[in-house]
Image (cartoon, rainbow, N blue to C red):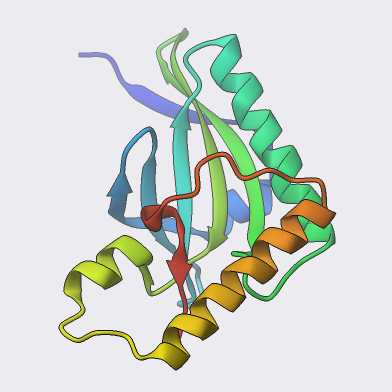
Length: 159
């Protein structure tokens, strides 16, 4: 059995070195991990398999858009921390390249929250939520960013 090693390829080396994977918190087209810093702070990182040129292009575009939003932040948009790429190898052979996008971690996504909620929302809560969402979409529009995957599981909630 050959040894598998992980090699840092590019991106934010300090981010990669500081945070350690703790547990899987979501799966889909990517895997989302909870990560913990040396000081105990918790964030999340999305792992994307970079199997082909198209996937790498989409990964780089996502980083470009997140960087654009980071320059012009909004309090209701998850904060992008940075990104990096790793290469898994067995001996001298490359096995798999993966991209990682690190972000602020919410307490839950909207889909999970709605599924666990036992009571109805009152009108004030609904108005506050809709107003917040409209403000976010307006901010993205002004920043010339189009979110192409808006769904309850991609809307994160914070305390």
